[in-house]
Length: 490
Image (cartoon, rainbow, N blue to C red; front, side, top):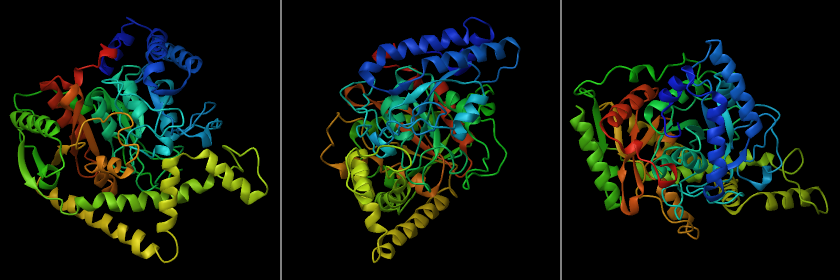
């Protein structure tokens, strides 16, 4: 059961080969065994999980179970969960028990999914390695001396190590796709606005988007189907019919299941900067897509090189604004000793935020300050428009865009601790997708040096989630990279 896919777990639960309580207990015991080393979970909710599993068993017994009823999952600790700690990986919220559920959490509860607990993350989702968490670094299950990626590293590590079959995450500049690549699993960031941000603690509001992790595209399709839907409490939520992303995957694969699919290969993604081992795996994966019937065309994203500088103006600016609410007054950490109100603000924020969060707040405050707003923030927004236009021009010539998810495999813990700019560059292939609001997916595509996973990224036009998932699913039907497990999950 530990390595079973979601459809296999569904069949086992419906056939009463295992109960939801037994399945939840299996994963909870696995968390107890592996979490001391991997540090993928901040909070484990054994009591709540078993209660939800008992309710799921009742639904199964009455024949009212859905696709996710009784299926265990982990939530990134950025999603508010009623009656449970929601920390965002920060000392600032280390004592915050949410009085309500995020929209995503509510939807998955209604679907009957069983939440095992809250997954570790970079503090306030700021980071690419999951080393900035107040609760300590998450370890990569493939090699515990290496990072799992971030900011959703706890969710990715939990799925890779089979501490949970599926998990939620958020993606602001690659924070679902990059850790999915580093941990050898599948992760999808949908079109901006498809997943409600209500109850998802904000980092950069115009970029943040909830996403899904699973071992395979099929597992991600089932999870994403339950996560999407209009929410009037989120002004950026899109009012459109929900889709069953798994439906298109059910059809039997033909000999050339991707015949007619045009995949664009941006010349900028295959220029300098990609490690040789990553390039070899990506080239082989693209050849596999061709064998499945897809054709490839060269396209260009001429402003892709501007994505990182634009992002690191826009995201810190929004972070500076969003995190101003954490002042020690209403909730969260408050300094024990202070002189007056201003001193309390200063000390509470200085003690509550970690170094990376402080760095981004300072940058964001600077670019929004008088005299710099036009020079930096408005200019970055203009670049954002150009980047989005580049994608639309490229997608006139292809159905999907493909390339590496990351320029290299997971680096060693601490290797970039003194060079944050180098770490920022690790998101060079993912950030532009968030700036444009497009959907993106990363799936396993092989292994690089040291046996560390390599991910291939697929990018689609707005609302092309079904096409992304189907392409990845057909690739996974023909390969077994997604079925490989790290030693701890064997």
